[in-house]
Amino acid sequence: MAPVSEGKALALGLLAGIGAAGLTLAVAAWYRRRREAEGSLGGWSGLPGRPWVPRQGQGDVADKLDGLIRSLEELKSEVRSLKETVPRVYRELGQAGTGRGARKRSSPGHTASRKRKKVEWGSDDGAADVAATGQASLSSEEVESERGYITAHTDTEEDSEEDKLKRCTVNSAFENSVSGAHEGSGTNDFDLLMQKADKLHGLMAEKNEGYLLLLEKKDQFRDKVEFLWRLARAYSDMHDITPDLEDKQNYAMNGKELAVDAVNLGPESADSHMWLAIICGHLSGYGSVQTKIKYGFLFKEHIDKAIELRPQDPKLFYLLGRWCYAASQLSWIERKVAAALFGEPPNSTIQDALQCFLKVEEIQTRYSKANYVYLTKCYKELGQNTNAQIWCDMAVSFPDIIEDHETQEELENLVSVLKQ
Picture (tube, one colour):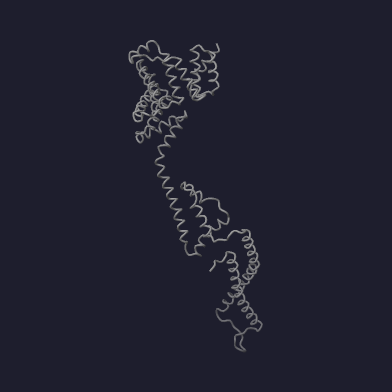
């Protein structure tokens, strides 16, 4: 039997109610007419010549019947109202059906089935895509169909095998995507940690947080090169932001040990060599001349290796230029100590330093304000004041770097000297 539409069902229900109410009203009218006839005859007992006398309890029954009659009168009024309403509702239902155009009518179960098919053939990218497809915006008819889903099941008794298979496919895909997301999260934890550490390193105010973040994971990732050189870098950051000299030296020493471990674990890691060199540069500022020379040579050794591994990194050439410039400024006694310890003193010159800083500019134009300051210093010491002024003006064009007080002070001094 074909399922009855919602509009027809409503109309049939109303008509059935009207019929039942009409029968009840007929019975009530017959009873009322009988009572009125009895009253006109002065009472009737059913026996000739004998007046009607109500027996005990019959008065209560009569009162109840009167109440029933009044209720039926009210019902009659409501039925008349319903008679007027039914045609109008039926017309509105017909107009709504016509407004859908040539679209094929379907039961709520069929509409839900079409929606499930959309999910099945949707994106396989994971739980998020499945959920997004299921929550896509619906038309008013589709929302109505969703509410009528249970009714459709009542009509068909149970899902078809095709619908069951589709639901199983969608559920399986959803569970697999969620499971894959959980499994993938474990492998991405380390990458996310490294990304966060890099971000915190780039913010002066967050360097301490980056150091604590990595320190907490030290035992868990100590066997990974990428982790070790980043933790060494964090110790270098703490050296830079800590005011106490003893604390600075302790951070540098701990960072050096980690950087050495990173180099031993991954000798082909340019970052490991670079941060070992930088920390050796920190340590060269503490202790005797002998200590300064020793760490200076270690700096040069690991910077050269880092450049060999990553020859297009402007930061490496900037650091090498800094070393060459410092080596060219060594005093006579420092050169003698270097010769005694290593056979020969560093023989770098201002020209060597200048070539390194120019290489930085060649690899990446406007790499840093500090690189322009050192280009200015090199040209000034070589007596090329015109070139020195050009690079000094370019350094001034950079915005002020509040955190780099040393560079800013050197630039201000150079501006004053070149004006003389």
